[in-house]
Amino acid sequence: MYDLIIIGGGPAGLTAAVYAIRKRLNCLLISPDLGGKANARLHIEGVDTFNVVNGADLVRRFRNEVEYLDFTRLLEKVVGLKKAENRFIVTTANGKELEGRAVILATGADAVRLGVPGADRYFLHGVAYSTVSYAPLYIDKKVALVGAGALALRGAAELAEIVAELHLIAPTHGDLDTILGRKLRAAKHVTVWENWAPAAVQGDTVAHQLVIKSPEGQEQALDVDVIFVELGLKPHTELVAGWAELDSEGRVLINRACETSVPGLFAAGDVTNEPAEQVVIAIGDGAKAALSAYEYLLK
Ligand SMILES: Cc1cc2nc3c(=O)[nH]c(=O)nc-3n(C[C@H](O)[C@H](O)[C@H](O)COP(=O)(O)OP(=O)(O)OC[C@H]3O[C@@H](n4cnc5c(N)ncnc54)[C@H](O)[C@@H]3O)c2cc1C
Image 1 (spheres, rainbow, N blue to C red):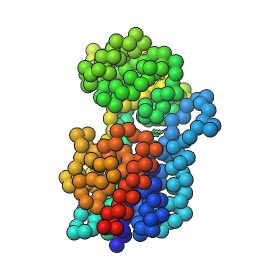
Image 2: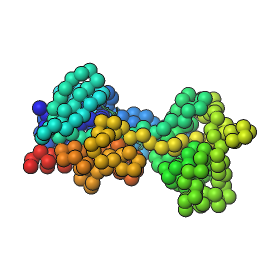
Image 3: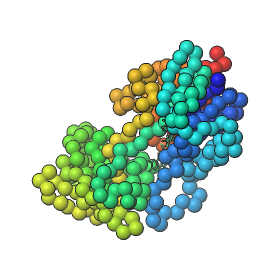
Image 4: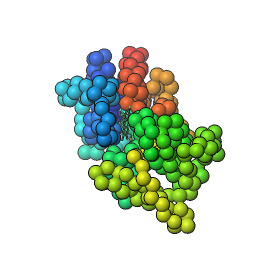
Protein backbone atom coordinates (compact mmCIF):
# COMPACT_ATOMS: atom_id res chain seq x y z
CA MET A 1 0.00 0.00 0.00
CA TYR A 2 1.30 3.46 -0.96
CA ASP A 3 1.01 6.47 1.35
CA LEU A 4 0.05 8.63 -1.60
CA ILE A 5 -0.97 8.02 -5.21
CA ILE A 6 -0.83 11.01 -7.56
CA ILE A 7 -2.89 10.74 -10.74
CA GLY A 8 -1.62 12.96 -13.59
CA GLY A 9 1.90 13.95 -14.66
CA GLY A 10 1.43 17.62 -15.60
CA PRO A 11 2.87 20.57 -13.65
CA ALA A 12 0.51 19.93 -10.69
CA GLY A 13 1.18 16.18 -10.42
CA LEU A 14 4.96 16.46 -10.93
CA THR A 15 5.31 19.14 -8.26
CA ALA A 16 3.16 17.14 -5.86
CA ALA A 17 5.39 14.12 -6.44
CA VAL A 18 8.60 16.07 -5.75
CA TYR A 19 7.15 17.51 -2.53
CA ALA A 20 5.86 14.10 -1.42
CA ILE A 21 9.28 12.52 -2.07
CA ARG A 22 10.96 15.26 0.01
CA LYS A 23 8.56 14.43 2.84
CA ARG A 24 9.67 10.81 2.44
CA LEU A 25 6.21 9.58 1.61
CA ASN A 26 5.97 6.26 -0.17
CA CYS A 27 4.33 7.74 -3.22
CA LEU A 28 3.55 6.77 -6.81
CA LEU A 29 2.71 9.09 -9.70
CA ILE A 30 0.60 7.46 -12.40
CA SER A 31 0.27 9.16 -15.79
CA PRO A 32 0.61 8.21 -19.47
CA ASP A 33 3.03 11.15 -19.94
CA LEU A 34 5.22 13.50 -17.90
CA GLY A 35 4.78 17.23 -18.46
CA GLY A 36 1.10 17.36 -19.43
CA LYS A 37 0.03 20.47 -21.32
CA ALA A 38 3.31 22.20 -20.40
CA ASN A 39 4.77 20.13 -23.26
CA ALA A 40 2.69 22.21 -25.71
CA ARG A 41 3.82 25.70 -26.62
CA LEU A 42 2.54 28.22 -29.14
CA HIS A 43 5.10 28.94 -31.88
CA ILE A 44 5.26 32.66 -32.51
CA GLU A 45 7.49 34.05 -35.23
CA GLY A 46 10.00 36.67 -34.13
CA VAL A 47 9.37 36.43 -30.39
CA ASP A 48 12.53 36.46 -28.29
CA THR A 49 12.15 34.15 -25.28
CA PHE A 50 15.69 34.68 -24.02
CA ASN A 51 15.65 35.59 -20.33
CA VAL A 52 11.89 35.01 -19.99
CA VAL A 53 10.74 32.99 -16.97
CA ASN A 54 9.32 29.99 -18.74
CA GLY A 55 6.76 27.62 -17.24
CA ALA A 56 7.97 24.74 -19.41
CA ASP A 57 11.52 25.09 -18.00
CA LEU A 58 10.25 24.98 -14.43
CA VAL A 59 8.19 21.89 -15.21
CA ARG A 60 11.20 20.23 -16.88
CA ARG A 61 13.14 20.50 -13.62
CA PHE A 62 10.38 18.80 -11.64
CA ARG A 63 10.08 16.17 -14.40
CA ASN A 64 13.84 15.46 -14.31
CA GLU A 65 13.63 14.71 -10.61
CA VAL A 66 10.67 12.33 -11.06
CA GLU A 67 12.41 10.65 -14.03
CA TYR A 68 15.58 10.17 -11.98
CA LEU A 69 13.63 8.49 -9.16
CA ASP A 70 12.00 6.03 -11.52
CA PHE A 71 10.42 3.89 -8.79
CA THR A 72 8.03 6.80 -8.09
CA ARG A 73 6.23 6.70 -11.41
CA LEU A 74 4.12 4.43 -13.54
CA LEU A 75 3.49 5.47 -17.14
CA GLU A 76 -0.11 4.35 -17.51
CA LYS A 77 -3.58 5.79 -17.60
CA VAL A 78 -5.83 5.39 -14.58
CA VAL A 79 -9.25 4.02 -15.49
CA GLY A 80 -10.80 3.50 -12.05
CA LEU A 81 -10.67 5.16 -8.63
CA LYS A 82 -12.80 4.27 -5.66
CA LYS A 83 -12.74 4.89 -1.95
CA ALA A 84 -12.79 1.96 0.43
CA GLU A 85 -12.51 2.24 4.21
CA ASN A 86 -9.35 4.33 4.99
CA ARG A 87 -7.85 3.74 1.55
CA PHE A 88 -8.32 4.33 -2.14
CA ILE A 89 -8.18 1.68 -4.86
CA VAL A 90 -6.74 2.73 -8.21
CA THR A 91 -7.09 0.65 -11.37
CA THR A 92 -4.85 1.27 -14.38
CA ALA A 93 -5.55 0.68 -18.07
CA ASN A 94 -3.33 -2.42 -17.97
CA GLY A 95 -5.40 -3.89 -15.16
CA LYS A 96 -3.08 -3.18 -12.22
CA GLU A 97 -4.83 -2.57 -8.91
CA LEU A 98 -2.97 -0.30 -6.49
CA GLU A 99 -3.87 1.01 -3.07
CA GLY A 100 -3.10 4.36 -1.47
CA ARG A 101 -3.97 5.92 1.87
CA ALA A 102 -4.39 9.29 0.12
CA VAL A 103 -4.80 10.41 -3.50
CA ILE A 104 -4.06 13.62 -5.37
CA LEU A 105 -6.09 14.09 -8.54
CA ALA A 106 -4.10 16.20 -11.03
CA THR A 107 -5.62 15.09 -14.32
CA GLY A 108 -5.92 18.57 -15.86
CA ALA A 109 -8.44 19.87 -18.37
CA ASP A 110 -8.40 19.99 -22.15
CA ALA A 111 -9.52 22.91 -24.27
CA VAL A 112 -12.42 22.18 -26.61
CA ARG A 113 -10.74 22.13 -30.02
CA LEU A 114 -11.87 24.04 -33.09
CA GLY A 115 -13.31 21.43 -35.43
CA VAL A 116 -12.99 23.05 -38.87
CA PRO A 117 -10.69 22.25 -41.82
CA GLY A 118 -7.17 23.55 -41.16
CA ALA A 119 -7.59 23.94 -37.38
CA ASP A 120 -5.60 20.81 -36.52
CA ARG A 121 -2.94 21.49 -39.15
CA TYR A 122 -2.26 24.92 -37.65
CA PHE A 123 -2.63 23.84 -33.99
CA LEU A 124 -0.13 26.02 -32.06
CA HIS A 125 1.04 27.49 -35.39
CA GLY A 126 -1.36 30.40 -35.53
CA VAL A 127 -4.25 28.61 -33.81
CA ALA A 128 -3.82 29.25 -30.08
CA TYR A 129 -5.65 27.86 -27.09
CA SER A 130 -4.59 29.91 -24.06
CA THR A 131 -5.44 33.60 -24.37
CA VAL A 132 -4.47 34.22 -20.75
CA SER A 133 -0.94 33.00 -21.58
CA TYR A 134 -0.33 34.61 -24.97
CA ALA A 135 -2.54 37.71 -25.32
CA PRO A 136 0.22 40.12 -24.17
CA LEU A 137 2.39 39.10 -27.16
CA TYR A 138 -0.04 40.52 -29.75
CA ILE A 139 0.32 44.28 -29.24
CA ASP A 140 -0.92 46.21 -32.31
CA LYS A 141 -1.73 42.99 -34.20
CA LYS A 142 -4.88 41.76 -35.95
CA VAL A 143 -6.45 38.99 -33.95
CA ALA A 144 -9.49 36.71 -34.09
CA LEU A 145 -11.00 34.98 -31.08
CA VAL A 146 -13.63 32.25 -31.32
CA GLY A 147 -16.05 31.76 -28.42
CA ALA A 148 -18.90 33.43 -26.58
CA GLY A 149 -18.63 32.14 -23.00
CA ALA A 150 -17.12 33.84 -19.94
CA LEU A 151 -13.59 32.59 -20.73
CA ALA A 152 -13.83 33.86 -24.31
CA LEU A 153 -15.07 37.31 -23.33
CA ARG A 154 -12.42 37.63 -20.65
CA GLY A 155 -9.74 36.79 -23.23
CA ALA A 156 -11.30 39.14 -25.81
CA ALA A 157 -11.41 41.98 -23.28
CA GLU A 158 -7.71 41.48 -22.51
CA LEU A 159 -6.85 41.45 -26.23
CA ALA A 160 -9.01 44.53 -26.90
CA GLU A 161 -6.74 46.52 -24.57
CA ILE A 162 -3.70 46.02 -26.79
CA VAL A 163 -4.46 44.81 -30.32
CA ALA A 164 -5.08 46.96 -33.41
CA GLU A 165 -8.06 44.93 -34.61
CA LEU A 166 -10.08 42.23 -32.89
CA HIS A 167 -12.67 39.96 -34.47
CA LEU A 168 -14.80 38.17 -31.91
CA ILE A 169 -16.55 35.24 -33.56
CA ALA A 170 -19.44 34.32 -31.28
CA PRO A 171 -21.18 31.24 -32.68
CA THR A 172 -23.97 31.77 -30.09
CA HIS A 173 -25.22 34.75 -28.10
CA GLY A 174 -23.47 33.29 -25.05
CA ASP A 175 -22.37 35.87 -22.48
CA LEU A 176 -22.59 38.88 -24.83
CA ASP A 177 -25.12 40.58 -22.55
CA THR A 178 -22.59 40.90 -19.72
CA ILE A 179 -20.49 43.98 -18.86
CA LEU A 180 -17.56 42.61 -20.89
CA GLY A 181 -19.81 41.77 -23.85
CA ARG A 182 -21.24 45.30 -23.92
CA LYS A 183 -17.77 46.81 -23.58
CA LEU A 184 -16.52 44.76 -26.53
CA ARG A 185 -19.49 45.71 -28.72
CA ALA A 186 -18.83 49.39 -27.97
CA ALA A 187 -15.12 49.30 -28.88
CA LYS A 188 -14.41 50.75 -32.34
CA HIS A 189 -11.60 48.32 -33.18
CA VAL A 190 -13.64 45.26 -32.17
CA THR A 191 -16.07 43.53 -34.56
CA VAL A 192 -18.47 41.09 -32.95
CA TRP A 193 -19.60 38.47 -35.46
CA GLU A 194 -22.63 37.19 -33.53
CA ASN A 195 -24.05 33.86 -34.76
CA TRP A 196 -21.29 33.53 -37.36
CA ALA A 197 -19.44 30.23 -37.23
CA PRO A 198 -15.81 29.46 -38.04
CA ALA A 199 -15.61 27.52 -41.33
CA ALA A 200 -11.89 27.05 -42.10
CA VAL A 201 -8.38 28.07 -41.14
CA GLN A 202 -5.93 28.89 -43.93
CA GLY A 203 -2.27 29.85 -44.11
CA ASP A 204 1.21 28.82 -45.23
CA THR A 205 3.66 27.71 -42.55
CA VAL A 206 1.40 29.43 -39.99
CA ALA A 207 -2.29 30.32 -40.07
CA HIS A 208 -3.09 33.76 -41.50
CA GLN A 209 -6.78 33.60 -42.27
CA LEU A 210 -9.99 32.54 -40.58
CA VAL A 211 -12.97 31.93 -42.84
CA ILE A 212 -16.31 32.47 -41.10
CA LYS A 213 -19.87 31.78 -42.22
CA SER A 214 -23.13 33.62 -41.42
CA PRO A 215 -26.34 31.72 -40.56
CA GLU A 216 -27.47 32.49 -44.15
CA GLY A 217 -24.35 30.86 -45.58
CA GLN A 218 -22.46 34.03 -46.51
CA GLU A 219 -18.67 33.61 -46.16
CA GLN A 220 -16.09 36.14 -45.03
CA ALA A 221 -12.30 35.69 -44.85
CA LEU A 222 -10.55 37.51 -41.99
CA ASP A 223 -6.80 38.19 -42.35
CA VAL A 224 -5.27 37.91 -38.90
CA ASP A 225 -1.96 37.28 -37.11
CA VAL A 226 -3.41 34.69 -34.73
CA ILE A 227 -6.67 32.85 -34.05
CA PHE A 228 -7.44 32.28 -30.38
CA VAL A 229 -9.93 29.53 -29.57
CA GLU A 230 -11.82 29.80 -26.28
CA LEU A 231 -14.70 27.35 -26.64
CA GLY A 232 -14.36 26.08 -23.06
CA LEU A 233 -12.39 23.58 -21.03
CA LYS A 234 -13.22 19.95 -20.35
CA PRO A 235 -11.88 18.94 -16.95
CA HIS A 236 -10.86 15.28 -16.55
CA THR A 237 -13.07 14.41 -13.59
CA GLU A 238 -14.45 11.07 -14.83
CA LEU A 239 -12.61 9.22 -12.04
CA VAL A 240 -14.45 11.08 -9.24
CA ALA A 241 -17.76 11.92 -10.92
CA GLY A 242 -20.62 11.10 -8.59
CA TRP A 243 -18.64 10.96 -5.34
CA ALA A 244 -16.52 14.13 -5.10
CA GLU A 245 -18.17 17.54 -5.22
CA LEU A 246 -17.80 19.40 -8.53
CA ASP A 247 -18.58 23.07 -9.32
CA SER A 248 -21.10 24.27 -11.92
CA GLU A 249 -18.44 23.92 -14.65
CA GLY A 250 -17.72 20.32 -13.71
CA ARG A 251 -14.38 21.01 -12.00
CA VAL A 252 -13.37 19.44 -8.69
CA LEU A 253 -14.22 21.80 -5.86
CA ILE A 254 -11.23 22.44 -3.58
CA ASN A 255 -10.52 24.72 -0.63
CA ARG A 256 -7.35 26.77 -0.06
CA ALA A 257 -5.52 23.63 1.08
CA CYS A 258 -6.49 21.67 -2.07
CA GLU A 259 -8.79 19.43 -0.02
CA THR A 260 -11.85 18.07 -1.81
CA SER A 261 -15.19 17.09 -0.27
CA VAL A 262 -13.78 13.56 0.29
CA PRO A 263 -11.31 13.08 3.20
CA GLY A 264 -7.97 11.83 1.87
CA LEU A 265 -8.71 12.96 -1.70
CA PHE A 266 -6.88 16.12 -2.78
CA ALA A 267 -6.92 17.85 -6.16
CA ALA A 268 -4.58 20.28 -7.89
CA GLY A 269 -4.27 22.34 -11.06
CA ASP A 270 -6.58 22.72 -14.05
CA VAL A 271 -8.93 19.93 -12.96
CA THR A 272 -10.04 22.11 -10.03
CA ASN A 273 -12.02 25.33 -9.59
CA GLU A 274 -8.82 27.43 -9.50
CA PRO A 275 -9.55 30.77 -11.20
CA ALA A 276 -6.94 30.54 -13.99
CA GLU A 277 -5.24 27.81 -16.02
CA GLN A 278 -1.56 28.59 -15.68
CA VAL A 279 1.57 26.52 -15.09
CA VAL A 280 2.66 28.39 -11.96
CA ILE A 281 -0.81 28.07 -10.43
CA ALA A 282 -0.77 24.32 -11.08
CA ILE A 283 2.72 24.10 -9.58
CA GLY A 284 1.58 25.97 -6.46
CA ASP A 285 -1.46 23.73 -6.19
CA GLY A 286 0.69 20.61 -6.51
CA ALA A 287 2.87 21.75 -3.61
CA LYS A 288 -0.15 22.63 -1.46
CA ALA A 289 -1.90 19.34 -2.22
CA ALA A 290 1.21 17.32 -1.29
CA LEU A 291 1.67 19.20 2.00
CA SER A 292 -2.02 18.78 2.82
CA ALA A 293 -1.85 15.07 2.02
CA TYR A 294 1.23 14.80 4.26
CA GLU A 295 -0.62 16.45 7.12
CA TYR A 296 -3.64 14.18 6.55
CA LEU A 297 -1.36 11.12 6.71
CA LEU A 298 0.34 12.39 9.90
CA LYS A 299 -3.03 12.51 11.58
C1 LIG B 1 -1.54 25.18 -25.99
C2 LIG B 1 -1.39 25.60 -24.56
C3 LIG B 1 -0.40 26.51 -24.24
C4 LIG B 1 -0.26 26.93 -22.92
N1 LIG B 1 0.70 27.83 -22.63
C5 LIG B 1 0.87 28.23 -21.36
C6 LIG B 1 1.90 29.15 -21.01
O1 LIG B 1 2.62 29.64 -21.87
N2 LIG B 1 2.03 29.50 -19.71
C7 LIG B 1 1.22 29.01 -18.73
O2 LIG B 1 1.38 29.34 -17.56
N3 LIG B 1 0.23 28.13 -19.04
C8 LIG B 1 0.04 27.74 -20.31
N4 LIG B 1 -0.97 26.87 -20.62
C9 LIG B 1 -1.80 26.32 -19.52
C10 LIG B 1 -0.99 25.26 -18.75
O3 LIG B 1 -0.40 24.36 -19.68
C11 LIG B 1 -1.89 24.51 -17.77
O4 LIG B 1 -2.50 25.44 -16.90
C12 LIG B 1 -1.09 23.50 -16.94
O5 LIG B 1 -0.41 22.58 -17.77
C13 LIG B 1 -2.01 22.75 -15.99
O6 LIG B 1 -1.29 21.76 -15.33
P1 LIG B 1 -2.04 20.47 -14.71
O7 LIG B 1 -0.96 19.63 -14.13
O8 LIG B 1 -3.14 20.91 -13.84
O9 LIG B 1 -2.73 19.75 -15.95
P2 LIG B 1 -2.15 19.18 -17.32
O10 LIG B 1 -0.94 19.92 -17.76
O11 LIG B 1 -3.31 19.13 -18.23
O12 LIG B 1 -1.70 17.70 -16.96
C14 LIG B 1 -2.64 16.69 -16.70
C15 LIG B 1 -1.93 15.36 -16.63
O13 LIG B 1 -2.85 14.35 -16.21
C16 LIG B 1 -2.71 13.22 -17.08
N5 LIG B 1 -3.97 12.48 -17.05
C17 LIG B 1 -5.18 12.86 -17.51
N6 LIG B 1 -6.09 11.88 -17.29
C18 LIG B 1 -5.43 10.87 -16.68
C19 LIG B 1 -5.81 9.58 -16.22
N7 LIG B 1 -7.07 9.12 -16.33
N8 LIG B 1 -4.85 8.80 -15.64
C20 LIG B 1 -3.58 9.23 -15.49
N9 LIG B 1 -3.17 10.44 -15.92
C21 LIG B 1 -4.09 11.25 -16.51
C22 LIG B 1 -2.36 13.84 -18.43
O14 LIG B 1 -1.81 12.86 -19.30
C23 LIG B 1 -1.36 14.90 -17.97
O15 LIG B 1 -0.09 14.34 -17.74
C24 LIG B 1 -1.13 26.43 -21.92
C25 LIG B 1 -2.13 25.50 -22.25
C26 LIG B 1 -2.27 25.10 -23.56
C27 LIG B 1 -3.34 24.11 -23.91
